[in-house]
Image (tube, rainbow, N blue to C red; front, side, top):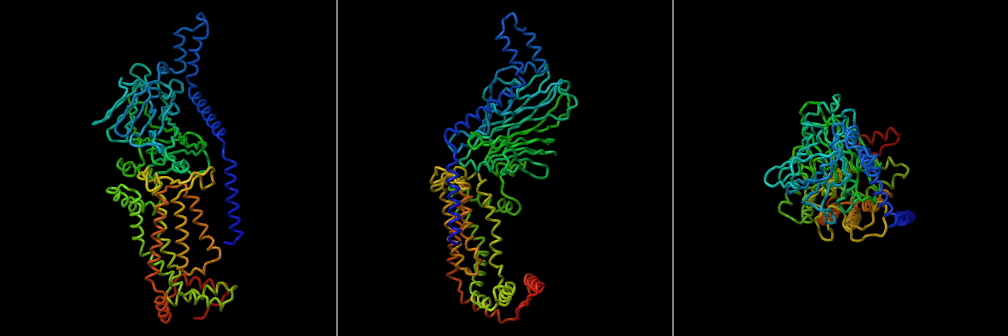
Length: 625
């Protein structure tokens, strides 16, 4: 790079840093945003109670008007019947909770709506050592929406009656259940039955409908299951966690997801065909609803919240579930509340392991059948994850050693031929670029050198680099595992917090990212010296230094396990190059090439033939052999 380019890059960096400092919100602005968020949440909760508003108004009337003007209890009952029909009695009640828990999860269920109100994973904590809550609070919505007696009914706002008086149900050696019923008259009810087994993240959920065939509208062939939650941030890197928090769903033949990196703050989709399950997925944990058979269709939405919002995202789903209108009907469903751990998810045989995103095609194949088995093997008897990553890196580099050696040998051949290529270039004017290329290719052909020999081995290694890029940020095994100065290998290893935010880079300095960048530049520079470095195009030399800095900006917020792996890979590559340099003799290589040059030329390669054809078509003369 020339001086002007360097000055330009420095000016751009200075402008970005200054812009970040100037536009960083003050503490007052952050507090104002929080107050605004709380106000909006309060307004939203009030809107949810709109169906009950008229009933509450009747109560207020009794308290504020003279006794002589108060309506009678009979009139109050009539008003509730007008609003809720057969569900009038269930529209009034007091919120109470029952807890269903085993050794892994603790589920707090509210009698209002009969819904899971709070879910805690007992074996995990947030990055700041708080209980790990998937969702909780009155902001959670879960219930059936349908028409009954010409009225719109939402069970989320009605009160269920538990069939037990226990407030805490402990699951120890065998499965236990909790049933709650929403009555619409004698022997007419909707029952939610939750069953939890020991040592399981799967919560069995059955909707039992009895005697409701003359209450629910007879023309309905589906009920709408409305599920809505605010997602708690669990990890230190909120930006990175945001990138891995989205909606997944399982069609009969594939698992798909809503792009979490879309620029829009609201991403929504209509699932117009049958599907098996829907997941509210975070980086390392998920809340999934699963049909024993299938769901009919759904409208789903993911909303990105403000950077300073206490929540990460808001998930919304309206799911159509089959309904036949029988006197008695059972709708078997289940929930998964748990970690995105590949082997844990796989054992349920529902393709939930797809929630652990490992890339596509060959990248996914490498992760699933190579990286994960090796990682799990070491994990079975080694507890230090820094050491596991080191051993994994060594195995990968040893496996790629033949390709690396072949690449180095090809570069060495081109390096020793460089003086001859320079001589050819002196004889052919610069403006005759095609003739120069033809002469160079002819020389390579005579001595038996493939100019692509150094590139192809590197290209073949790229899928492994991409596989590791996908593996580390999604490996829950690295979560909250420390190594050296990194207190959590699943997120960035900050050694310095900045008082401002740099676009792309962030507001901290990650040491493993710095080490990766420096080692990349050194490895590339030394590797360039080993090859025919002076034949590079002018812009390529500058690009060699720009690219590591670009990766430094991008990976500063990523998993420190990933940047640690790249650093180790660079160090091993540096050692390999030093070893190759010691044992590969340039003089012997040149002697072999000269012997090959005297032999009868081999048959033209397809690439050589195409290049010569292009030369003739453009009217250039081919060089004499």
